[in-house]
Length: 496
Image 1 (cartoon, rainbow, N blue to C red):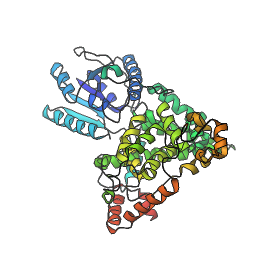
Image 2: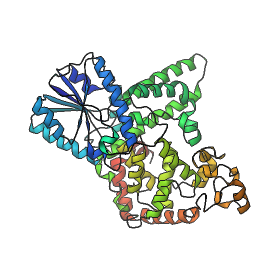
Image 3: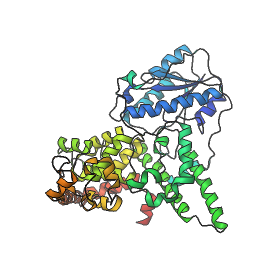
Image 4: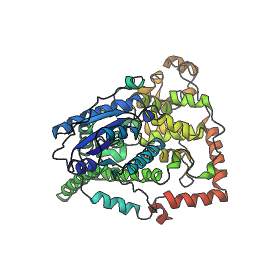
């Protein structure tokens, strides 16, 4: 019996482990609900809802070719042991995973179990991450070579074993989770992911490069594929192949006299983001400790002993007194998604203005991002928090971001209704409204909407000074060289 273990690869298309296993004999398709993951600080009931929708469709697709998805609840590899005792497993098939510490330790246990029982475990790459990479030199070329290999074909048929019990899906109630209150969540599953991909490439993505930064336009102009990639409803290779086909079509149109320049510019920008996707995941693959530790150890002790719980709770609730910060957090609570620039602003504000250590804030946002991808998440968090030692320190002004990205307050008023009647000239800083105008707008600052939790200029100067002190140290420069050699973009190194 071949056992295909589905994890963050909830699809049937371009699923190499499934294709290989189905050709070799009876094929058990397994998904395991792991309580250790479900009860972690990074998980939310909205994740489970999305996963279950994807699993239901996956089961339906498997049944069309003779297969079936079976479910188990438990710890790995104990679940595998129970299955193996009932019906011996000849080989285990799965995709490689660059996950958090829980999945890393779990996979090590599974590897030991497989070796103990003389069972071959075939792990297949599903993105441009290179396992056991010795050097970042040449990584981009290795990723390109991987992309040149065609996607795996659909299995023609699957022969399901007859002597294995097939259990049902589990719900939030089965794990004592409160059902999510988030609204307007995307539909999970491969079919929905393909529809989102096509709508981006042919309808919504024309002005992606221009409109991806503003929360007003990003919801429509961004690809919105991140959750489907994170849970593997569509594969990286599927997206890259569809993108390349669309680019060829547009170039042919240009050679015929029509010039879809906006489309080509936007899709080139998106293609770069797909490369960044793998680039940041590679960092966690190469150094799993960055989930917990500063990438540059020169920053150890920077914020650890100054965590302000009151600031943290205000940031979590969207009650900081900075309208765009609060609007982004409240939008996230409703939809489990905000665009990249606004994520960066949230992290910057927490890390610099509130001087909060990145680890608790990273866990909080991981729980609320439906597209939580550990490799990207923790790498990006450290970059935005200034603890990599190699990236430019970017301290976003929450006032300037309003002027740049939401000057009419359209996004702010939608998610912070207390400010719905505030005039545009005060929407970035409502605390500066005269008292009479506050009454006219029905928004008394300090009562209906909070005063700024910190003063921007003072917080900015303090953060900048503290970071600069560390960056000027010889030990920090030495650490920066080490980090750059291990994780840095080779394009940047050539530029330097």
